[in-house]
Image 1 (cartoon, rainbow, N blue to C red):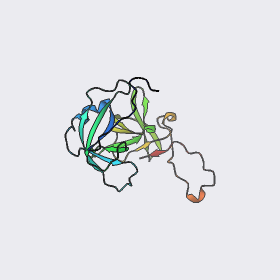
Image 2: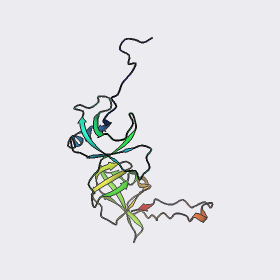
Image 3: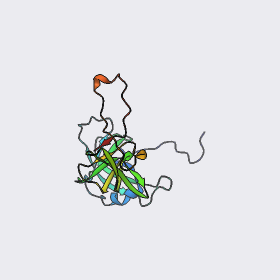
Image 4: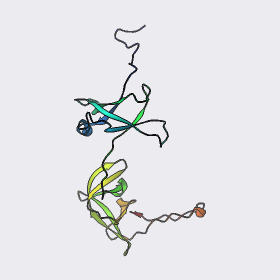
Length: 194
């Protein structure tokens, strides 16, 4: 017993394949610039071993409007006669140009201080910390990209940033040797890392 309009069967034409995925609304314009560029994306089927070559994909369509619930844009990429099964899950890879001089820090290293984004710089000579304002250029998973405010080689505190004060003395975290794992380790003060 079915009500009127209920889908009973869906047929798929066994031919060229599309990879269909959604992107955040702020990425819709970037994917539109890839329309028609052969091999602009790479596709890796799930379950393949890491050394398996990727398959080229061409962005064929980007939805004109975002989904009102998820606020994402649907993207369709043509993979032609790639050896993919209907309904198979894939990872879509978008090659990006390498950026030199980018500094990435864990989210735990960044704090808000007097309305400004800052980090704690570690001074090895005095073993103290001082606040350093920074400009965040974006986020990448559990990391932030620092646009300005830090130089290569500076050490930044990555743990306990919310309990530090300017000029506070800290010490570097040192992991216990494998042979000492059973012995209880002393509680370290906030750690500094690169």
